[in-house]
Length: 226
Ligand code: DX5
Ligand code: ZN
Image 1 (cartoon, protein in one colour):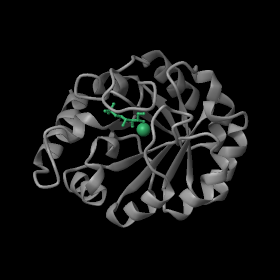
Image 2: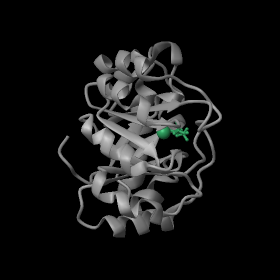
Image 3: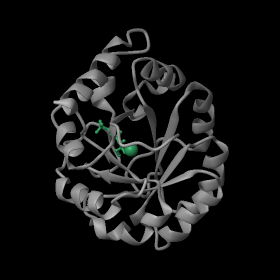
């Protein structure tokens, strides 16, 4: 996974068919997805439940590229090894998930996975300044985490502040929530390079009819290219 700041589209399987996740990942990649974004929720850190490391392990053979695992769980540390063994390429923990984000990010790296840190909409950019030396990705939530299909919350100032804070360091800025052809140019213009999109990618298609996924991905790319 060599570093670059080109725009990467990361479909979130939260908006895919839960009974066909493996085939959905393959379809999304075949239709042009760069990364696959996997949302893990615990019904405690966020008010919704999805799945855990066993699902990630089952999905791994169906994802050729980057498996980007977004942990919306607290605590994080007891589960890091299981997600590493499941084959996560990126493991992102929330800065709000506990008092020891620094320790958590060290543990993710020690497990051989690329560490990411996520910020809820109510958390300022400053909250991650002192862990930038430990991460390869900062995820800016543009919805309150827990559900797909929510309305985009403008975090342009935060993205620009992070972009400046990051400078030349090889750290991706990922945006998660409400990304579509209308909002994508705003976040890309502010400095983001990884765009997570659930509903905007999977709408209108299915495993049996995956072409709309490709059209949706191309529409986001075209909007960003302006
Ligand atoms: C929200 C999740 C997102 C979500 C995005 O808690 O972290 O990844 O699936 O979905 P959309 O793109 O529909 O807002
Ligand atoms: Zn997510």
